[in-house]
Length: 421
Ligand code: 2M8
Image (tube, rainbow, N blue to C red; front, side, top):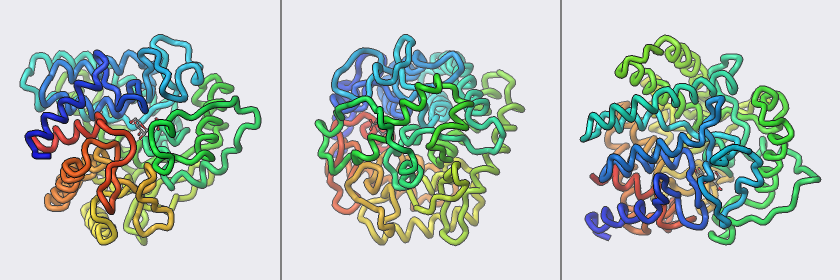
């Protein structure tokens, strides 16, 4: 595909996935609105339809809970092609939603949408109306997921991290005992995608067991912080939230809301929390198991995200670049979702090896900001090349460049639009 043709195709993917105010990630496999997908997709819409871009975020917030939580899926209308749907989650509200969250990219993307908007009046009005809802969401994180002010959020499900079957969660998830009374279920994902590219059955049983744990706890977060058998600190959540708080602070100042001191307090804690995940010997940041308190010593693409957060010192940023260069010796395309030196690296299985355009976007942004434009450009070029070679796939094989998972995928199209214009 030539760039011009690919750009037209990327716009076509977003239009085809548009369900009126929200964009599904891809038909069949994911027929609802997902939180962080909506953020990236809004950035894509911004390149050719600004009102539609703002609508994506407004529609997402229709799912926000009264306590501020922004759920990871909003089930705007019934669809039979996905499991677990609203019945299994058992959340009684309209529209129905899941009961967990996802990487909170929204504040950061609202800021960049406001900065790049052609229609400044519209952008300012939309940012102003979204701001209090984003603030309520970030206050929820602090109040319900870091009540002891450790600077790290407690994550209660691999789905919250966005990187569902990452090898980083293997031990923490294995500790979850499959509920013997788990209601029977039929997976739908493996009807759409080759099972060798999806999580394993043992993982799904535990993903579903955790839902029953939440329901039994009445979704009480503070209770789940004590009782949930799966509790981790995830770089994807903590780094995305740190940057989102930096951008929320910027928005507060720019729009005159006056919450700067409160947000600066959160930033101080998360700066300390994230930098506490650094491993000097590995030259990387590691996720942490909050049940054992131990670092999870497997390198994953999120290990580079303190560059995106902006918490890393220049020395640590340099070490990260060296580590990334080591990974680049092992794969053709950056950035594999798992360290390709690791025995757990599986180049075609979902979050255990493949390249994801959205994570590439976050890492490249961080590298550029730390003064490594060439490394950022390499990642950008790899991403565009993958799309040109294999289309708008959900993820890509880091050795062969083959497209994997769902096709005509919204966030891949969105990143293509953002990066090639
Ligand atoms: C994937 O996750 C969903 C559950 O949330 C699934 O497999 O059913 C992940 O890649 C996640 O990060 C993404 O937001 C979602 C939709 O693209 O799909």
